[in-house]
Image 1: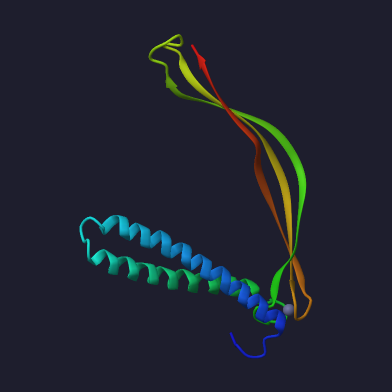
Image 2 (image 1 turned 120 degrees about the vertical axis):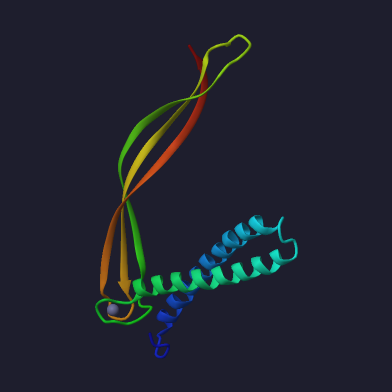
Length: 166
Ligand SMILES: [Zn+2]
């Protein structure tokens, strides 16, 4: 991809993608660095600093590169071929349905007291809400736009209660 001739809008999209990929790199560095730290801090009290730093820098660079490449591919317009041209223009959520749900799970057994011998049941209730999500992407260079349709499920009003039962 060429760096020259980016319009102001394209530069803004590129900055935004850079920002997202730096965030992804930072999360990867925290996770991988943290794992290395936990795995080696007892065995190698001195070297673990170097291991952690290397793993952190390596996973930061790797994740940033991969995420940036992935986002950049999405941001290239299929119509006019411009890089950093396509961005999310609009998100629309349409409510589809609300279904009451209930789940019972045995979480233990009382071994003393007034409920001795009874099973402890955790009853969870919630409302399962379904939404249709339509995302509209558009190109800032040629105006080409397309939509992506997906569904989203939200567990709303979650409540859990514990009861004893024979
Ligand atoms: Zn375009």
